[in-house]
Length: 134
Image 1 (tube, one colour):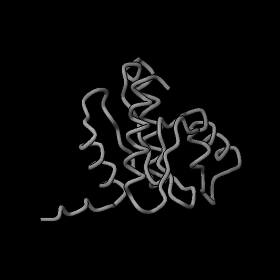
Image 2 (cartoon, rainbow, N blue to C red; image 1 turned 60 degrees about the vertical axis):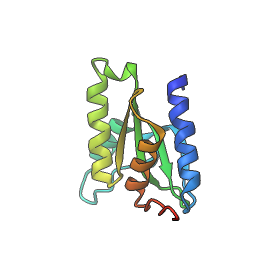
Image 3 (cartoon, rainbow, N blue to C red; image 1 turned 90 degrees about the vertical axis):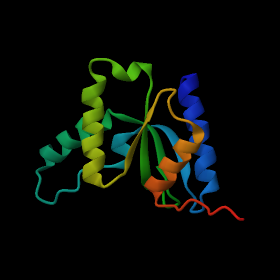
Image 4 (cartoon, rainbow, N blue to C red; image 1 turned 30 degrees about the horizontal axis):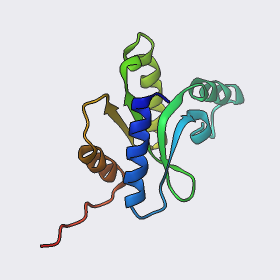
């Protein structure tokens, strides 16, 4: 992880620690380790090809629940994210996650304050913001 990615990682760790539910944050997670083909009608080769297309992809961060399932995929859009092939890799990841029913969130480099990140994560996890006492 570079410094900017580490800052996002630490912020995510702090945010999920505030949320009850036993969520944890993992970095640089192989997509093939958290989702896989489930078609009952696909051939073995089709399943193998589908797995190969996602297994080489990495999630920048995965928020996992207490059962170990991915509750939220988070991509940090740092400077290197705008290279030629990054768009294609991101499109494959987004589609695989969509099909698996995993929420996906993008964090733009240097443009997101912690308060906004907290609100986005809580929304994606379905956690209500605490009500301020008067």
